[in-house]
Length: 124
Image (tube, rainbow, N blue to C red):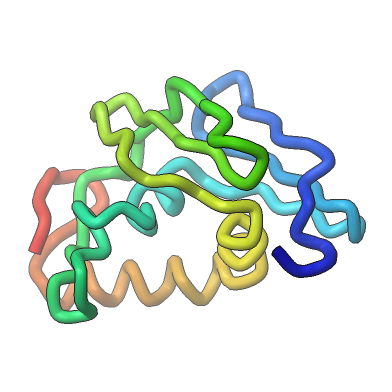
């Protein structure tokens, strides 16, 4: 883990749709449950190769129902659609925070290219 990756706060919003992460460097990010769900590091979403990666639609209103520690290096997020196999390391959460706008734009473009949308379930 590189310097600055250590979180000093992890807070789930009352509506369960935003996870706030603050790091020892002072960086603070508000990550939407939708972005975290569709960017899950799980093999179910990412596949084992780039060609296997899935674009997951219908997650606009997904909520995080649990945040579970994994050792001292990560958390497992459990979503209300019962997806729970992604382990989010501190460095991944920092990276997602730093790149959230670009990643979300790419996600929206992928949805459109595959005929999917944020409100209807589906994966391609």
